[in-house]
Length: 296
Image 1 (cartoon, one colour):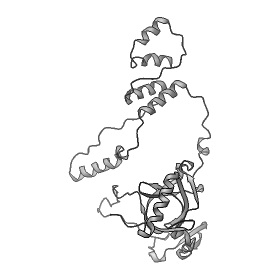
Image 2 (image 1 turned 45 degrees about the vertical axis):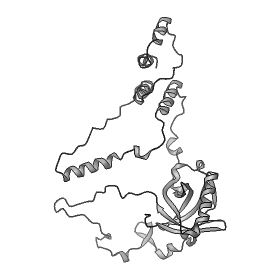
Image 3 (image 1 turned 135 degrees about the vertical axis):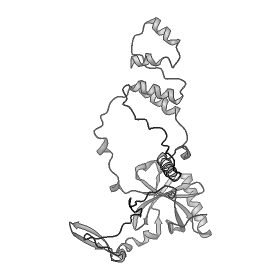
Image 4 (image 1 turned 60 degrees about the vertical axis):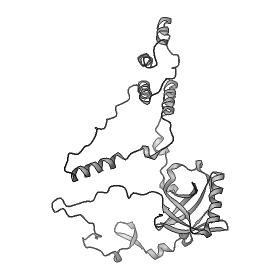
């Protein structure tokens, strides 16, 4: 059964408008959460709204404000915030359509399932979903969630629609500020072939069930062990990554661990003697490793 709607309103495409409901597409209810306690008394620690003098402030006496200089602020009332873009608070106005590939993944934020609100919305809802699916486009608009206006991207998802909020440009840092010092250099062809083969050997469709939250599992073990008054099983100690001394060796070993049957032939660089070359061709791909190590 569907949970309580996070947001209700309308989607508008030109002159077509239909009512919808938004539901959170992700949940953190299954995550274990730790609270803070007084070690001596065992009582849980609670936080109160206090001013700088240490006095408790009642919720009705708390207002929002912007500090324009130290110790001075401009008060902003909730009623004033509610008057900002009233229309966008209840309507997602689709103003543009873009290919999904044109949106950098760094801009995507939170996902929501969109469900039609009753039979009256079903026809328009299905038409928009089918049109987005056939054109492979994402619809863009804006919506107010939790008193904040967000960019909304809507795309087809199975039998329905999914909306993902997008970050604004000022929220995203520029990659050039962090990648500017990376020097451009020519990539070794043999290393590149090995890396590509390693990628192919580990290529598969994404399955979220394949990835486990080891921290949550470990935290559950700690809690269970203490409740059962037994020793905590921390499992194997995590391996510390070592520095890569020879990338060719590291790639070859990685292919062996990945179960690769063969390796790409390295480019000809050294002049091997005929006998040594003939002897090498009789060896298995696993036995070639020392020879490749010598030439790298």
